[in-house]
Length: 326
Image 1 (cartoon, rainbow, N blue to C red):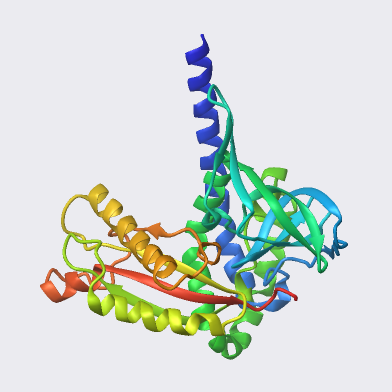
Image 2 (image 1 turned 90 degrees about the vertical axis):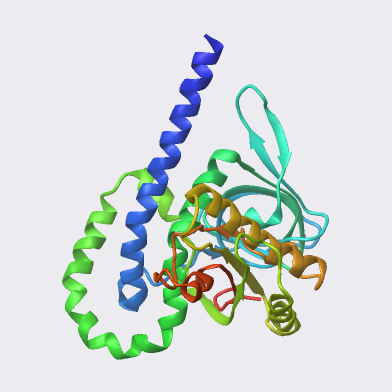
């Protein structure tokens, strides 16, 4: 009976996570349209009331991560109040596990992606909440990572095309009627959709300041000398950017087994993370979850040796959040 109940619980958890991810994909399309048209109200979430935490004030709050900037993130609670949370080397980050094997499991700082529901415990300093503990459930973490992975192409497109948006105002004016209908439909959605909407970060706040594409040898996750030189140059310039965040995505060519390529791309992304943190002492809290995409995003579809080589890569992006206050 216990095993049957546990399996049923696991299935319900999987279905809830899958439903959340499906809703996020649909909302991402709507939010991208809003990103291109500032008058729609979707170019960024409505600003919440700002919380100033007094020096030494003890506070425990629960909410959703709106944006992340290396050592800080903005947390919005149920009262629509925004708190700037400061991470330190002593901050404990843990997941809460449910089921038969309950307890808390240490987690890496890179999992604090926008959209994750967390509970923060800490003290105030400089109007911010300096976190001593950050906790979240494994179910919420899975949903947030799925949402973050699905909206990654939207974030990249928004950053790379922001300078061209002014030229499209004439065409976008024709979509006001469609957007008004979309607003009406969104207002009538279930509370589940509203909760998922809070998981999506402010997509237009990030400015892309640097992109480096690191190449890898066939079936290898080992950094070449040329790759190390590229990362050395990137790391030398990173401290010049205030509140920077590093996004790392690994890829593989389409030859071989799909699952093997997926693991290989993840290993390549983690190799870049290790080099940046160990060799150049870039804090791990400034790095978003390193993702391996396998052979899903090919730069070159030709079967030639040169074409395949272009797909064996890791893309490293340095982003700066323009919307976070001091």
